[in-house]
Image (cartoon, rainbow, N blue to C red; front, side):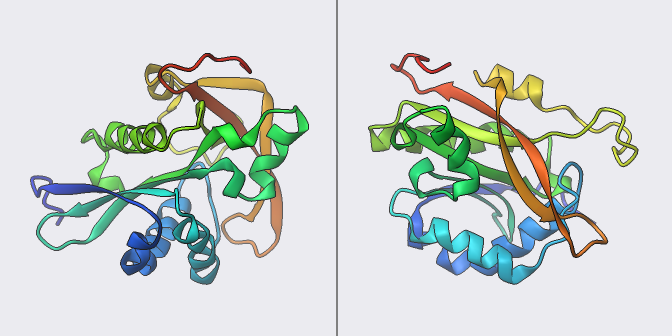
Length: 211
């Protein structure tokens, strides 16, 4: 049984500081990404390789949530300069002529279901936005969100639409910008492309010049 009163430590780490947690984070990503809306049939080796890109970036950030007693990793949110991200993510910005050197990209936020609703989503955003601002040189923070049809029969009852939460944080969805990333869905070994909407927010003191 989960102890919902157990204290949670949240730390902001960068680059190689995340190395001791690599395996836990890879497993956490697999667990959460099997859920809606990702429905991702992944493997640990791929997740480790993906995380190593962030580990090797000198300006990456990991907002790490752990149980205070055991140190178990129960959530994490990542970020990296967009210029260090994959071409799948950078490509849409390059296509429309947006300078990727000025954008700090937020990777996924993953949190075990038992610990949701405790304000960690805000702490994940606070930690990443603060890190991006502290680096200097970045005008915007951006992230991608999986698009699913409203009538998708796999949508679980009561699935939460996070658009309102992101809007409260000052993010805006760009209807004409999207990334396309392939992954295998549950029960399949064949990857297929998925559309992800792009959301952005200007960092404090910067104008939304490309919005």
